[in-house]
Amino acid sequence: MPDLELLRSLAPPVEPASRELMDRARPRRRRRQRRPLLLTAPIAAAMIAVLLLTQDRQPFAEAAVKAAEASPRVLIDGWQVTRVDEWQAGTGEMTFEREGRTLELRWPPDGKDKFEQVKGSLYRYAGVDDFVLLLNDVQIRGKRADLEAASGELERVGVQEWLKALPANAVAPTAQTATIDGMLKGMPLPPGFKAPAATGETRDRYQLGAKVAGAVACGWIERYLAGDPRAAAALATSREWPLLRQMDAEGDYPEAVWQYADAVNGASTVPGGKPGLTIGGTYKDALGC
Image (cartoon, rainbow, N blue to C red; front, side, top):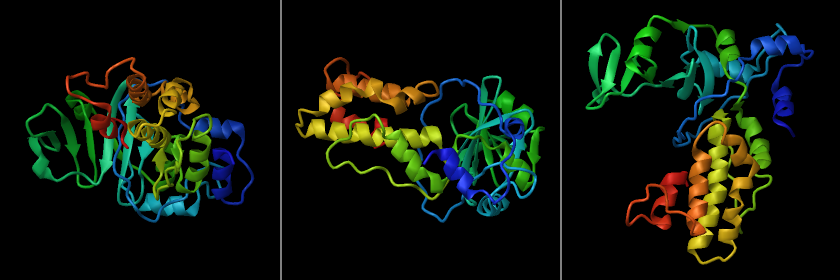
């Protein structure tokens, strides 16, 4: 079942919203600067059903509202939310973008022992030129000038306003199984392959895609290391995998898979290119296996 139909099944029983209303409510997704993969460990927990904007009557599913009520609802005026990942009441990550610049918000914040205070709520990681705004319930990471400007633009908002600001690329827990099945289409699967399980939190589609593509690529690399003659040919098709082609417009994960595919087929070295690096010794960390 398509993602949109799954999301509709989570919505309250109201008449569908007009196309005009949907277009106004959803932030437009811009072609972004390429971003590196941000993989974090899954957090097992009971989770939300996610967002579908309908008409003014009860626009979001009840479970999504409850999770939002328990979350720190911070927006940054003039900045667009382009990513929300591993979101539940106790934890979450969000990316804000503005004119090619990014700020990364996460909750809960790290302990202050990791930082050196610069002034007020502005800190930097000890020993490096990497800055954060450290608040009681969230931390925001980015360049110092952007953080100093954003400190006056932070908004604590209500549940409905916060949910409406979240991007359409968030994949709800109840939609993840069907989404994963769709992502696997067009990829040759290694013998005995098991698809990644749905998690208990809302995932960013790019991050979920990296998990799915990584599981396939890592499975074939394991077969290659075990001497399976089919592995190199399967990995050689990776530039045609629909999922990686979709992800390539947004981030760098596909290039990592392709470099390992080339290395398996003798056309390049493993990422890093240093003497002594091997496929078997590096692929798990590089691909998030």
